[in-house]
Image (cartoon, rainbow, N blue to C red; front, side, top):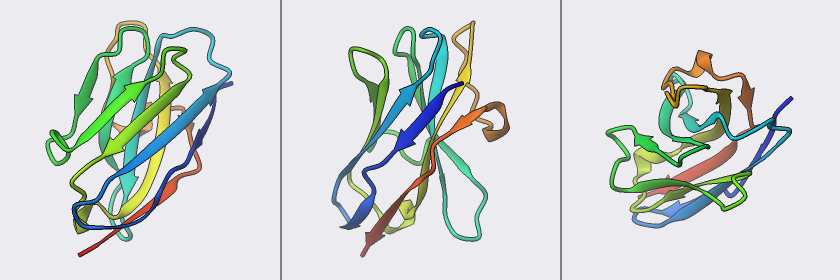
Length: 126
């Protein structure tokens, strides 16, 4: 059973930065996709970025590409989402998620993910 603990949220002004760590435990090996999603009040949960644990391959939503960076540490049990050049529309609850993936494909659909963190709030003021 994989457990995820995400944190690092806060309140920043537009243009500011945050780094959100997600600490994973209980993984059997490195064949996992790790992802970040976000959900603003009254909105659907939106995929933000993914990284394949085994080889570090990353993909990003168009809305954040070039501003956000997903990475993992050497031990591959912590995934970070670096948020730069934040905008008010980035305000949301951010969730870390994980799913097994043997072929390296990382889904962008939330219902494909089995494991979730509790969420961390990011608020960006103009």
